Image 1 (cartoon, helix red, strand yellow):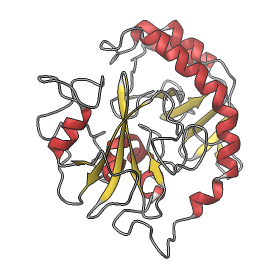
Image 2: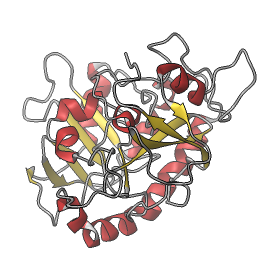
Image 3: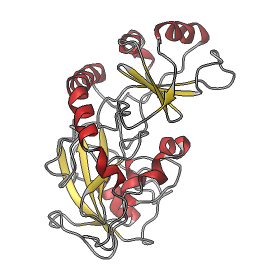
Image 4: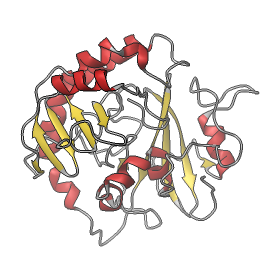
Length: 298
Protein backbone atom coordinates (compact mmCIF):
# COMPACT_ATOMS: atom_id res chain seq x y z
CA UNK A 1 0.00 0.00 0.00
CA UNK A 2 2.87 2.39 0.70
CA UNK A 3 5.47 3.78 -1.66
CA UNK A 4 7.97 5.54 0.59
CA UNK A 5 7.65 4.04 4.06
CA UNK A 6 7.81 0.26 4.64
CA UNK A 7 4.59 -1.62 4.01
CA UNK A 8 2.46 -3.12 6.79
CA UNK A 9 3.30 -6.78 7.35
CA UNK A 10 2.35 -9.74 9.50
CA UNK A 11 4.34 -12.81 10.51
CA UNK A 12 2.26 -15.98 10.29
CA UNK A 13 2.65 -19.06 12.44
CA UNK A 14 2.73 -22.40 10.62
CA UNK A 15 -0.97 -23.15 11.13
CA UNK A 16 -2.11 -19.75 9.85
CA UNK A 17 0.32 -19.95 6.92
CA UNK A 18 -1.00 -23.36 5.90
CA UNK A 19 -4.53 -21.94 6.03
CA UNK A 20 -3.39 -19.14 3.72
CA UNK A 21 -1.89 -21.60 1.25
CA UNK A 22 -5.19 -23.52 1.15
CA UNK A 23 -6.90 -20.31 0.01
CA UNK A 24 -4.16 -19.43 -2.49
CA UNK A 25 -4.96 -21.10 -5.79
CA UNK A 26 -3.15 -20.31 -9.03
CA UNK A 27 -2.14 -21.94 -12.28
CA UNK A 28 1.28 -22.75 -13.70
CA UNK A 29 3.70 -19.81 -13.62
CA UNK A 30 4.81 -18.86 -17.14
CA UNK A 31 7.25 -16.26 -18.47
CA UNK A 32 5.53 -12.89 -18.85
CA UNK A 33 4.93 -11.51 -22.34
CA UNK A 34 3.62 -8.19 -23.61
CA UNK A 35 0.12 -9.66 -23.53
CA UNK A 36 0.34 -10.63 -19.84
CA UNK A 37 -1.66 -8.48 -17.42
CA UNK A 38 1.09 -6.39 -15.79
CA UNK A 39 2.05 -6.46 -12.14
CA UNK A 40 0.25 -3.38 -10.78
CA UNK A 41 2.89 -0.66 -10.31
CA UNK A 42 0.31 1.77 -8.97
CA UNK A 43 -0.07 3.96 -5.90
CA UNK A 44 -2.26 2.76 -3.07
CA UNK A 45 -3.31 -0.87 -2.56
CA UNK A 46 -1.72 -3.16 -5.16
CA UNK A 47 -1.98 -6.68 -3.76
CA UNK A 48 -0.44 -8.99 -1.18
CA UNK A 49 3.18 -10.11 -1.06
CA UNK A 50 3.64 -13.57 0.44
CA UNK A 51 7.19 -14.41 1.46
CA UNK A 52 8.46 -17.69 2.92
CA UNK A 53 11.32 -17.19 5.36
CA UNK A 54 13.68 -19.97 6.36
CA UNK A 55 12.54 -23.48 5.46
CA UNK A 56 9.68 -23.38 2.97
CA UNK A 57 6.33 -24.75 4.09
CA UNK A 58 5.38 -25.22 0.45
CA UNK A 59 8.40 -26.44 -1.51
CA UNK A 60 7.02 -25.77 -4.98
CA UNK A 61 5.90 -22.20 -4.20
CA UNK A 62 8.36 -19.35 -4.93
CA UNK A 63 10.17 -17.75 -2.01
CA UNK A 64 8.32 -14.48 -2.72
CA UNK A 65 4.97 -14.23 -4.50
CA UNK A 66 2.93 -11.12 -5.36
CA UNK A 67 -0.83 -11.75 -5.44
CA UNK A 68 -2.85 -9.12 -7.33
CA UNK A 69 -6.59 -9.90 -7.41
CA UNK A 70 -6.71 -12.50 -10.20
CA UNK A 71 -3.00 -12.91 -10.98
CA UNK A 72 0.20 -13.94 -9.20
CA UNK A 73 3.73 -12.84 -10.09
CA UNK A 74 7.11 -14.29 -9.16
CA UNK A 75 10.61 -14.13 -10.67
CA UNK A 76 9.47 -12.62 -13.97
CA UNK A 77 6.68 -15.15 -14.35
CA UNK A 78 2.91 -14.88 -13.92
CA UNK A 79 -0.19 -17.05 -13.64
CA UNK A 80 -3.94 -16.67 -13.35
CA UNK A 81 -5.16 -16.93 -9.75
CA UNK A 82 -8.42 -17.41 -7.94
CA UNK A 83 -9.91 -14.14 -6.70
CA UNK A 84 -10.74 -13.25 -3.11
CA UNK A 85 -7.53 -13.73 -1.13
CA UNK A 86 -8.08 -10.27 0.39
CA UNK A 87 -10.55 -11.93 2.76
CA UNK A 88 -7.56 -13.57 4.45
CA UNK A 89 -6.02 -10.13 5.01
CA UNK A 90 -9.14 -8.79 6.69
CA UNK A 91 -9.62 -11.96 8.76
CA UNK A 92 -6.12 -11.42 10.21
CA UNK A 93 -6.06 -7.62 10.14
CA UNK A 94 -5.17 -7.21 13.82
CA UNK A 95 -1.83 -8.94 13.21
CA UNK A 96 -0.59 -6.14 10.93
CA UNK A 97 2.52 -4.28 12.07
CA UNK A 98 3.70 -0.77 11.13
CA UNK A 99 0.22 0.79 11.29
CA UNK A 100 0.04 2.15 14.86
CA UNK A 101 0.32 5.77 13.66
CA UNK A 102 -2.50 5.32 11.13
CA UNK A 103 -5.99 5.81 12.59
CA UNK A 104 -8.84 3.86 10.97
CA UNK A 105 -6.36 1.97 8.80
CA UNK A 106 -8.80 -0.86 8.11
CA UNK A 107 -11.24 1.59 6.52
CA UNK A 108 -8.42 3.15 4.52
CA UNK A 109 -7.45 -0.29 3.23
CA UNK A 110 -11.04 -1.06 2.23
CA UNK A 111 -11.30 2.22 0.29
CA UNK A 112 -7.98 1.69 -1.50
CA UNK A 113 -8.85 -1.92 -2.33
CA UNK A 114 -12.14 -0.83 -3.91
CA UNK A 115 -10.39 1.87 -5.96
CA UNK A 116 -7.79 -0.67 -7.09
CA UNK A 117 -10.44 -3.15 -8.21
CA UNK A 118 -12.52 -0.44 -9.91
CA UNK A 119 -9.51 0.72 -11.96
CA UNK A 120 -7.82 -2.62 -12.58
CA UNK A 121 -9.29 -3.17 -16.05
CA UNK A 122 -8.72 0.46 -17.08
CA UNK A 123 -5.09 0.28 -15.95
CA UNK A 124 -4.46 -2.99 -17.85
CA UNK A 125 -6.17 -1.74 -21.02
CA UNK A 126 -4.20 1.52 -21.03
CA UNK A 127 -0.97 -0.27 -20.14
CA UNK A 128 -1.32 -2.52 -23.17
CA UNK A 129 -2.24 0.49 -25.32
CA UNK A 130 0.85 2.42 -24.15
CA UNK A 131 3.27 -0.49 -24.02
CA UNK A 132 5.36 0.85 -26.91
CA UNK A 133 6.76 3.63 -24.71
CA UNK A 134 8.53 1.02 -22.58
CA UNK A 135 10.76 0.35 -25.61
CA UNK A 136 11.61 4.04 -25.99
CA UNK A 137 15.08 3.97 -24.39
CA UNK A 138 16.94 5.79 -27.19
CA UNK A 139 16.54 9.57 -27.12
CA UNK A 140 18.40 11.30 -29.95
CA UNK A 141 17.61 14.85 -28.78
CA UNK A 142 17.02 14.94 -25.03
CA UNK A 143 14.45 17.46 -23.85
CA UNK A 144 16.16 17.62 -20.44
CA UNK A 145 19.87 16.94 -21.20
CA UNK A 146 20.96 16.67 -17.54
CA UNK A 147 18.20 14.26 -16.50
CA UNK A 148 18.61 10.48 -16.41
CA UNK A 149 16.67 8.18 -18.72
CA UNK A 150 14.09 5.97 -16.97
CA UNK A 151 16.45 2.95 -17.33
CA UNK A 152 13.71 0.60 -16.17
CA UNK A 153 15.86 -2.49 -16.69
CA UNK A 154 18.32 -1.35 -14.02
CA UNK A 155 15.51 -1.19 -11.44
CA UNK A 156 13.20 -3.98 -12.59
CA UNK A 157 15.34 -6.89 -13.87
CA UNK A 158 16.71 -8.11 -10.53
CA UNK A 159 13.84 -8.89 -8.09
CA UNK A 160 16.02 -8.02 -5.08
CA UNK A 161 16.89 -4.59 -6.51
CA UNK A 162 13.20 -3.95 -7.18
CA UNK A 163 12.27 -5.06 -3.67
CA UNK A 164 14.98 -3.17 -1.76
CA UNK A 165 14.63 0.28 -3.39
CA UNK A 166 11.65 2.61 -3.12
CA UNK A 167 10.33 5.79 -4.73
CA UNK A 168 12.96 7.96 -2.98
CA UNK A 169 15.75 5.81 -4.37
CA UNK A 170 14.28 5.99 -7.85
CA UNK A 171 13.39 9.68 -7.60
CA UNK A 172 16.99 10.58 -6.74
CA UNK A 173 18.33 7.93 -9.15
CA UNK A 174 20.37 6.44 -6.32
CA UNK A 175 20.27 2.74 -5.54
CA UNK A 176 21.04 2.12 -1.87
CA UNK A 177 19.25 -1.26 -1.47
CA UNK A 178 17.96 0.08 1.84
CA UNK A 179 14.45 1.41 1.06
CA UNK A 180 15.85 4.89 1.71
CA UNK A 181 13.97 7.39 3.88
CA UNK A 182 14.19 11.20 3.48
CA UNK A 183 16.29 12.73 6.25
CA UNK A 184 17.48 9.43 7.73
CA UNK A 185 21.08 9.91 6.59
CA UNK A 186 21.28 13.38 8.12
CA UNK A 187 19.38 12.81 11.36
CA UNK A 188 16.31 14.70 10.13
CA UNK A 189 13.94 11.86 9.24
CA UNK A 190 10.33 12.94 8.79
CA UNK A 191 7.86 12.73 11.68
CA UNK A 192 4.64 13.59 9.83
CA UNK A 193 2.95 13.36 6.43
CA UNK A 194 0.32 15.97 7.27
CA UNK A 195 1.66 18.75 5.04
CA UNK A 196 4.55 19.86 2.87
CA UNK A 197 5.60 22.43 5.49
CA UNK A 198 4.98 21.93 9.20
CA UNK A 199 5.84 23.85 12.36
CA UNK A 200 8.80 22.74 14.48
CA UNK A 201 9.56 20.44 16.16
CA UNK A 202 7.72 18.30 13.58
CA UNK A 203 9.72 17.37 10.48
CA UNK A 204 8.07 17.11 7.08
CA UNK A 205 9.19 14.76 4.30
CA UNK A 206 10.31 17.84 2.32
CA UNK A 207 12.47 19.07 5.21
CA UNK A 208 14.06 15.65 5.51
CA UNK A 209 14.88 15.66 1.79
CA UNK A 210 16.32 19.19 1.99
CA UNK A 211 18.51 18.00 4.85
CA UNK A 212 19.77 15.22 2.55
CA UNK A 213 20.74 17.81 -0.06
CA UNK A 214 17.73 18.12 -2.36
CA UNK A 215 16.75 21.69 -3.31
CA UNK A 216 13.18 22.93 -3.00
CA UNK A 217 11.95 24.38 -6.32
CA UNK A 218 8.23 25.13 -5.80
CA UNK A 219 8.06 27.49 -8.82
CA UNK A 220 9.79 25.20 -11.33
CA UNK A 221 6.43 24.59 -13.07
CA UNK A 222 7.36 21.23 -14.63
CA UNK A 223 10.33 22.70 -16.54
CA UNK A 224 13.70 20.97 -16.99
CA UNK A 225 16.40 21.92 -14.54
CA UNK A 226 20.18 22.11 -14.57
CA UNK A 227 22.38 20.89 -13.04
CA UNK A 228 20.86 17.55 -12.08
CA UNK A 229 17.25 16.60 -12.60
CA UNK A 230 13.75 17.48 -11.41
CA UNK A 231 11.69 15.43 -8.96
CA UNK A 232 8.22 15.91 -7.52
CA UNK A 233 7.01 15.07 -4.01
CA UNK A 234 3.38 14.13 -3.27
CA UNK A 235 1.71 13.09 -0.01
CA UNK A 236 -1.27 11.43 1.53
CA UNK A 237 -2.17 11.17 5.22
CA UNK A 238 0.05 8.15 5.83
CA UNK A 239 2.84 8.16 3.24
CA UNK A 240 4.83 10.03 0.59
CA UNK A 241 5.83 9.40 -3.04
CA UNK A 242 8.38 10.76 -5.54
CA UNK A 243 8.34 11.14 -9.33
CA UNK A 244 11.32 12.05 -11.51
CA UNK A 245 11.46 13.90 -14.82
CA UNK A 246 13.47 12.06 -17.46
CA UNK A 247 15.67 13.16 -20.32
CA UNK A 248 12.73 12.78 -22.70
CA UNK A 249 10.72 15.33 -20.70
CA UNK A 250 8.23 12.76 -19.38
CA UNK A 251 7.93 11.46 -15.84
CA UNK A 252 8.41 8.03 -14.30
CA UNK A 253 8.23 6.62 -10.78
CA UNK A 254 8.60 3.50 -8.66
CA UNK A 255 5.74 2.68 -6.24
CA UNK A 256 7.36 1.05 -3.23
CA UNK A 257 8.56 -2.53 -3.76
CA UNK A 258 7.00 -2.76 -7.23
CA UNK A 259 8.70 -2.09 -10.59
CA UNK A 260 9.50 1.40 -11.86
CA UNK A 261 6.99 2.52 -14.48
CA UNK A 262 6.24 5.24 -17.01
CA UNK A 263 2.50 5.22 -16.32
CA UNK A 264 0.12 6.65 -13.71
CA UNK A 265 -2.66 4.88 -11.79
CA UNK A 266 -4.91 4.87 -14.86
CA UNK A 267 -2.18 3.48 -17.12
CA UNK A 268 -1.59 6.82 -18.85
CA UNK A 269 1.71 8.52 -19.78
CA UNK A 270 2.78 11.08 -17.15
CA UNK A 271 3.44 14.53 -18.60
CA UNK A 272 2.88 16.44 -15.35
CA UNK A 273 2.79 14.90 -11.84
CA UNK A 274 0.42 17.66 -10.72
CA UNK A 275 -2.35 16.43 -13.03
CA UNK A 276 -1.75 12.67 -13.42
CA UNK A 277 -3.75 10.01 -11.59
CA UNK A 278 -1.91 9.64 -8.25
CA UNK A 279 -4.46 7.47 -6.45
CA UNK A 280 -4.64 8.42 -2.75
CA UNK A 281 -1.63 10.78 -2.94
CA UNK A 282 -3.81 13.81 -3.52
CA UNK A 283 -1.54 16.44 -1.92
CA UNK A 284 0.99 17.78 -4.43
CA UNK A 285 3.81 19.11 -2.27
CA UNK A 286 6.57 20.59 -4.43
CA UNK A 287 9.12 20.18 -7.20
CA UNK A 288 12.69 19.52 -6.02
CA UNK A 289 16.09 19.54 -7.69
CA UNK A 290 18.48 16.61 -7.35
CA UNK A 291 22.07 17.71 -8.04
CA UNK A 292 24.05 14.58 -8.79
CA UNK A 293 26.78 13.90 -6.25
CA UNK A 294 25.54 16.60 -3.86
CA UNK A 295 23.10 14.70 -1.68
CA UNK A 296 23.39 11.88 0.84
CA UNK A 297 21.20 8.82 1.30
CA UNK A 298 21.89 6.14 3.86
